[in-house]
Length: 68
Image 1 (cartoon, rainbow, N blue to C red):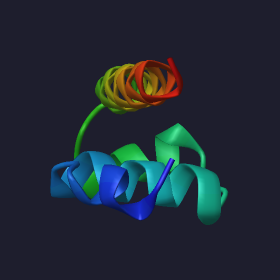
Image 2: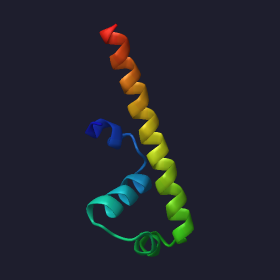
Image 3: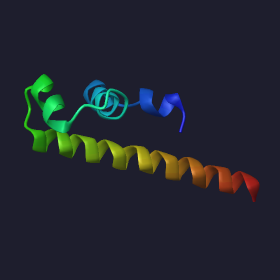
Image 4: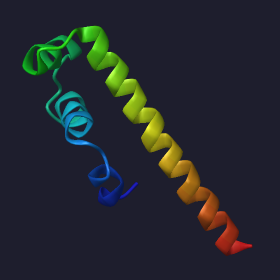
């Protein structure tokens, strides 16, 4: 994954990932900052991971096609 993949994310999901993975914050703490429920932060987190996974899979497919 490259930084351009992360830069394509909207502001809130990007911040949620940064807080969770780099600042080691719990979902409840992040929820309080955004004035959302922990459940909603969890949904946004999961949705964002699915989106990034899809981007990685498409990039991997393109690399495989180049190698063929």
